[in-house]
Length: 115
Image (cartoon, rainbow, N blue to C red; front, side, top):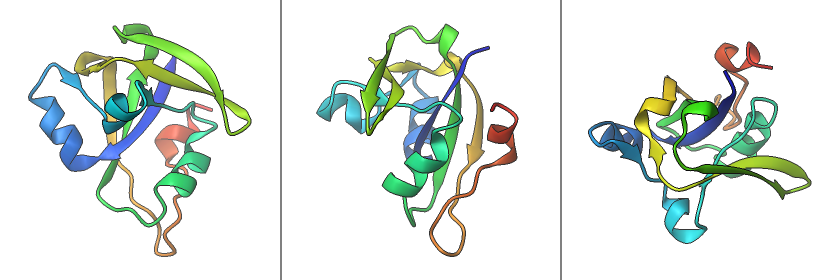
């Protein structure tokens, strides 16, 4: 299985579960859903989600994603971008993703096992 990860607000994910697909705000503003590989998720979380609460981490089987996934350069790295809505059945695990008391995130054990 080829796993990619996506951070989102729990309420946004809960709303999407009743639909057949997940629609991130970035799909409207940038044309794709930001995702990360396991080795990138901690850097992304601490840069873009510092001190944010009520987040979840989506584990996505990229082989099951119906929309096109392009690996593109950003911030000196190559990230997976999903060009279209994410079909819910491609998400095989969801975990709560809360920052530590200092506002920074640590790598969940579920992600460590992917590296």
